[in-house]
Image (tube, rainbow, N blue to C red):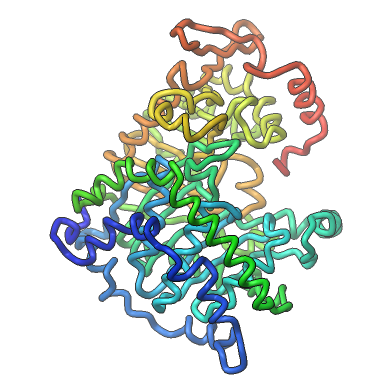
Length: 542
């Protein structure tokens, strides 16, 4: 299945094919914030109440370009394209921004202040300038010192920002937040971990990526091996309902309620100059050459983006979970519903998560699946590749039990970037190391569960999450092939037991088998530090 109108020489098709090119050739017709200087609130400009009343108005999406691009569906099917490459994930978002005519709704846990994010923000402002309503809902945990910058966006009459479960301390440094967290840990330790990108209630990007260089294969110390899916059809409407649940909740606080200091025009101009220079340099970087070389752009160039049909539905936690008001019941939390799907497995269960802490009950359930003849495989980070070492301690304490139960364990190597499809990009990536960030569950050849949820206590009990359940043997087989490649001996460590001792098996550059009898590629002090943390870190917070 393909996006039908792209097969013809339509104006819309040309817009989509060249979305990335317009970002490249945009000059000084307006820097990232130039439009905001003119749109800065003055007497008579759009107020927050007017923004709120506007969003309550019914919006007709049937005549939008995206609606016209999407094929007709039968039997309630949606259609999907996997975005396992960070460059493709970036250009897919940029293309949706470019095509949007009515609304753009973004919900994210992290929004970095770097080149890829600013490029996307630039495109969002351009969309707002042409009348698109843009809503940004961000978790507040990593928002320290960003209020002024974000207030510049929120000043646009067509852009509104809200922060979920915010800190009251709004200073530029994190120390005041730390003390507030100590005093109100029950509320502030619960975060909105959802990651959604919705265009015109018609097309969505769902998966594990936040907004930042490390998620889009741009230059960074750590590059995440991550996964998104582009979806169109009924899944988009369900995703929008999830977004609306959070946007309209009492825990989504307008930025104007938290940051009341107006930005001076001088500050706006100073930031505009800096953004203009950064974007000019970014447009001339090797990153955009990599974007041009992606399969997604080639599909655009051939006027056809291949989509795979499949039945799908979304499951998400309610906003109230973030403050502990609701019990863990199937009707309101995704966890129990996913467990019911796992119980249907007859042949195989594949679990891919950067942070994997099964707990005693999880080990017991996985052992039960193995006992019934179901093959259970897990791919997570090795200690040397994880970006959150303390979480590794929660996983490490269950490795031996999992292996004894018959679960197969694989741990991603940090030098995966040196190999296979990453090798040609090594020059641009420099000394970046790989770290798994994919959140994926595969059940038999039937179900693929893609979303924001890790397999750890924090995702299950504390944070809110979103998961898309796709029923498609074609998509599952594609994902299994990706999984097999990541688990090859030169990509990951295969963990096993030799007596009561753990061993890690891999291959070196000469294709020779190498066996480690301790956490591979780590030094004594790192292993000692992890041992100490394993005694101190409470598992329910990991």
